[in-house]
Length: 155
Image (cartoon, rainbow, N blue to C red; front, side, top):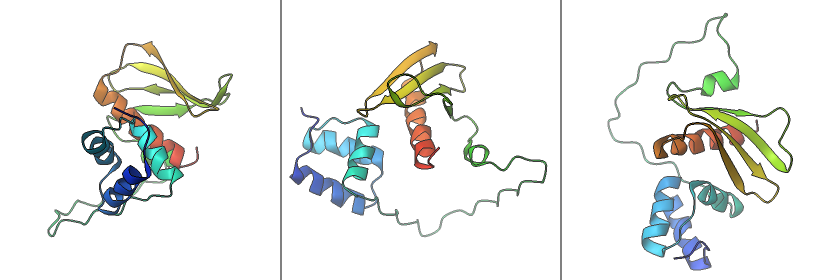
C-alpha cells in the first residue's frame, strides 16, 4: 500500500472530482481502487497542488425547502468567525503568536470538553497535542473540516 499518487491515479482523481465526489469520497476511492492511503488534509492539498476543483453536486429534483435563517439584529455579532460557527462543531482558533517552528498553530475545543493544540510546520507536517482528554474519530474529522474552512478564509 502506498501514499504516493501516480499520474494515472491523479487522472482518476480528476474524474472523481468532475463527478462531484467530495474529499472524503475521493479519499475512500483512493484506498479502495488504488491502494493509496492519504489523510483528508493530504487529499485536500493534492487537489490544491494540481488545481483540481470538485464540481458542484447536482441538486436533487425536489429538495425540501429550508426556512430562511433569521437576519442578525444590530446587537448580534456579525464577524466571519461567528457566522461560521456551527452549534456542536469544534471551536478552532489560531494562535496570535505562532509556536516556534510553526508556519501556523492554534487550539481546538470540542463540544465534549476535550481540548487540543495543533500546528503545521514549515514542511507542511501536522502536529497534534492533547490538552485535556482524547478526541474521538468523529471529533477529529469535524476538526479537520473546521480547520480547512478556517484556513480557506485566510484567517
